[in-house]
Length: 196
Image (cartoon, rainbow, N blue to C red; front, top):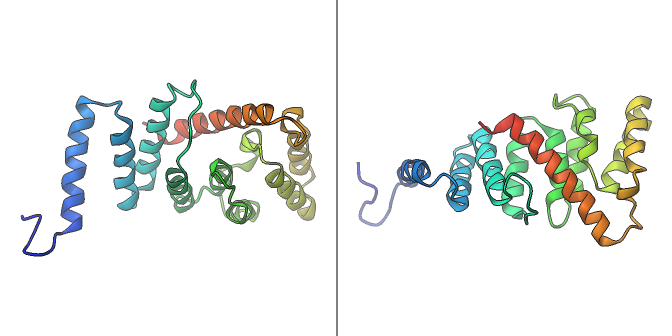
């Protein structure tokens, strides 16, 4: 089978060859962050969303030394993780990942969390309240729970909103530390689900 013809190439074949080469390379250099991320991109393009999440999370594990060193998150990778979670029907995870973006995508976060509240998702919002640090998202959840008469969930969201470290009047360092702590907790939870 030829990769290239006279003036064109078959992208599917190139992708398959690249995947085989990457798999072999990762056997010898399993901690190469760029290669792990590229494998995630290949899986994402091939619509293997769970495998894509597996690779993206592995790249975070390696570059952060198992989440002990703060890392900068690439918006493109986060967007691909968001889409992967959405395609897997995990809308709570989508809503939380929207906080990781440099400019929080409130529209997508609110829409995704609205789908969770309409019971269109089975990924247990209650289990992730401690991973939300954005006050606007927390206030939205309080509003939704109040509107639907879900007083236990509203109380839980209100308690998280009232945490001292999430106070919007705190200095930047405290808010940054609180968000990093919650990012690490959330990413570790995702690793338990997707990394194998």
